[in-house]
Every structure is written in structure tokens, then in C-alpha cells.
Amino acid sequence: MTSFVPFTFPQHTVSFGYSFTRRYPVFRGRPSGNESQHRLDFQLMTKIQDTLFIAGRDQVYLVSLRESYRNEIIPYRKLTWRSGQADREACAVKGKHRDECHNFIKVLVPRNDDLVFICGTNGFNPTCRYYRLDNLEFDGEEINGLARCPFDSKQTNVALFAEGKLYSATVADFQASDSVIYRSMGDGSALRTIKYDSKWLKEPHFLHAAEYGNYVYFFYREIAVEHSNLGKVVYSRVARICKNDVGGSQRVLEKHWTSFVKARLNCSVPGESFFYFDVLQSITDIIDINGVPSVVGVFTTQMNSIPGSAVCAFSMADIEKVFWGRFKEQKTPDSVWTPFSEEKLPKPRPGSCAGHGSAASFKSSVEFPDDTLQFIKSHPLMDTAVPSIGDEPWFTKTRVRYRLTALAVDNEAGPHKNYTVVFIGAESGVVLKVLAKTLSVSLNDSLLLEEIDVFNRAKCLSGREDDKRVRSLRVDKDTHSLYVAFSSCVIRIPLSRCERHSSCHKSCIASRDPYCGWKSHGVCERIQPGVVTGYEQDVEFGNTAHLGDCQGTSVISMS
Image (spheres, rainbow, N blue to C red):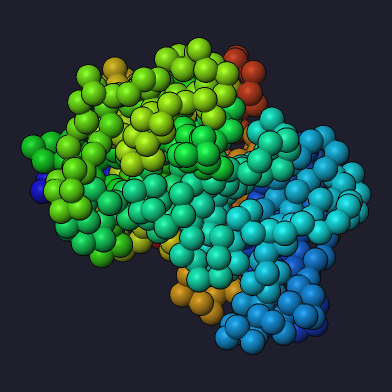
């Protein structure tokens, strides 16, 4: 196995004690009674129009992104939805602790411009409701949350609406043994993955879903069935289903997906033998990287190995290419997995969408022949893994005791909007800010610009082991802000701290921060997007050979 890549020391380390970090606004929810008894219990945050929705235990908070850039994070509206008394009592009878029987909000997705669909665990009785976006009033009747929302706050899940239908990925039973990718609502019958079939899903942790072209994609990690002889090894996956899938015939795959295919995501350091970061922790929406639709994820080593983390990007074109490649098969339960011969594939090609490609002559997936349906039922896994862009990570973090857990990307950083900056949260409470090398032809490697100790020990609860873990990150470019979510609080920090360089010309240029520039009046300031003159900046090289040292200026606080 290759050794870890060398650790790169950050350009600037911002410690908690530094005045910039301790003053950042902290949101803890609105405590009722004793604050020590009240936890935000953060579950998710999402941006809808100009509002940031922060969901936790029994509450959803709405924060205006246009007015929240002042000194505090103050919600302009709050939704309270608690578990009913009967649900809490039933939860206790099932053997759950009182703290587990709250209503943890796990789904919050817009249905249209007027309605938002919200689901909660509701004391281990998942329930969903529609609320009006303009006033958060309950609209209609309660909806069963089974297969749409998990039972337990600790279970991961994803959901989105595509063409009026809800696509959800979660567990569909109290014991968490029935993992499912499910489509419901809208017209047509509900569809799901096959129940208890480890070739389809094996203990998955769902992390993201995205609509793209004719498909919905799911990003997750799971136990790798193709390596079951080595014990429990986790692999990262991308799965794809056709939006026009209506299930199979009465003989094969009725009310089940006919287009479910999945592939491994390969985030590894090349060498004589590859070093793999197999465990997907967080992944972006589909964004443009150098004009190419892509996703960017943070991956870690297996939990039973030494800590290591990496950021890898994958183009949607490379993902599509793998799904048009060879399938993997296991001929007997004890045999190794091998590629399936292309010549033996049934027609139309398994995994195709009706009316498209090799299935162009079929009006509906119900019409697919039995051999195509039987094949996809037993062969959902592709043979080739999806390679990362450039066949290597953008960034690695090794030889530290913590793993990276979440990320957000500004793919239009700098005044010319031509740089990509990745913000990566860690289980230790720090946020790394990385200038990414997005083109393999670039002479420069990715650069760790800052390591910011964001977690506020004075204001955020830290009694639990994972309270410092960064749960989620969200960039708001318009207010130059990054929202950093922990279990008990959300902290807003600026995307840059140019003023740290004070009046030191050399430090400002050497920082290579695309958000910062040296102004003619002798200070380092944030450069507004679209401003192309009146400042000095060298993001590519940070060349300061022509500049003298700064005297008596303390610009860095090392942690």
C-alpha cells in the first residue's frame, strides 16, 4: 500500500481565540426553559428562494439570507411540530429513550413555488405534511411517512421532487433492515428497490439525490457485496434510475425499478498500488467545474483504519460512461465477481429508459422482455468504477487525528469568477478552505489557504463526543457567508478574512486568496465580484519577490 501523501501546512491558521472567530454569529435555536435541557439537534439546512431553512428537533427555523448578514442570526419565522402524546407513549413502549421520541425533521423539500414538503420521525412513527411557503401554515392532511422519512434521527436519508413525484431514499421499517429507494406521489403507482436484496442495497447511508437529464441520481455509501469475502468493506456509490420508469411486467419486477443501476465512485491516490478513500461523507449538487457538470465529494478511509480524508470531483459524463459500460456478475454465491460479456447482454440494454437509446421502440418499461428485466434484477452493479476528474483527489488531509465530514463549493470565486474554493468541515470543529486545482494541466497543486477553528465552545453545547463534528456547510455568495452547522448550533463565518493581513502588502499577495486584493490606499480588502481593476492580486503564484517584509505587523494567529 502506498504511504499517505505529505501533509501541506496551511497558508494561514485562524484559531478560535483570535478575535475574528469568537465574534462570529451563533444560532442555537430558541430555548424554552432551561437552555441546558434544550438542544437544536440539527438535522438539515436548505436554501429555498432567499431563505435558509434550519431543521432540528421539533422545530424549523427560517432565516432571511438577505437580512441575516448583520451581527446575529435571527429567524423571522419558526415552525413548531412536536410528536403527538400518543406517538411519544408508543415510542416509549417500543423501548426507545425519551430523548429519541421527539419529532426530528428529516425531510424538507419544495414541492412547487407555494408548498414545502416536510417530514419528521414523530416518535418513531414517520409522518409528513405540506406547509405553505409564504406563511408556514399546515396545508391539507398528514401523510404517512413510511419509506419517505426514517424512524430514527441518526439514520441518513435523502428526498427530492422531480416532475411532480417524490423520490426518497431511507429505511422503511422500525428495525432499519429494509433500505429502500422509493418513488411516490404524483400519477402512477409507487416504485421501489427490491426488498432485502443485498445486490441492490446493503446497509446504505444515503447522502444526496439529484435530477439530471432523464434520470435521478442517488449518492450513498454501503457495504460492498463484491468484497464480502474480505469482511465488511464500505464503498461509495452512485445509483441511477429513469424518471419514466413505471416498473416491470406482472411476471418480473412489477412495482419495482427496471432501470436501477449502480457503480462505485473511485476516490484514490494513484501510485504503484492505489490508496483508496472509500467512505463518502458529503457531496455537492451537480455544479459546473470548468464548464463541465460535476459533483464534488469528501471521502474518508475505512472507519477501522488510520484517519485520512480526500476531496474528489466526478463529471456527470464519466458517470454516464460507466453506466453504458459492462456489468458485474457473480455466477455462484462463493465465486469472485467478474465482468459480464457485452455480447451476451439481452436487448434492449438493461438499465435503459423506455423510449430512449436501445429501448426507443418501447413505450413503457412494462413492455420490456423478461430476459432484460431478469438481468437487471440480478445484475444492478456496473463493472467499472467511476474515475475522479484527473484520476486523483483535489486535496488530501492525512496524518491528523480527525476525518473530514462535510463540504461546500464556491465554483465562481474571485472577481473574475474563475477559481474554485472548497470549504471542508471536520469532526474536530475546524473548517478548511482550499483553493482547488481543477485542471490537470495546471502547474499548481491545490492549496490549503486557511484552517479555521469555527466551533464556539462558549456558546455551543459540547457534552457529547460528536458535538464538534461539522454536520453541514452552505455557501451564500451574495452575502459572502458560510453557514457551518453543528448538532447544537449554526455559526456564520465570512468566506474570507482579508483584513487579517492588515496593511502588509506582502502577506496579502502571498495569501493567494481569490477573495482578497491589495488596494491602492494601502490595505488588503475583499474584492467584490465583477470588480476587475484597482487592486493587486496573484492567486496563481503569490509572487512577493519584489515586496519587502512587513515590520511590526502580526497577521497570523497559529493554533
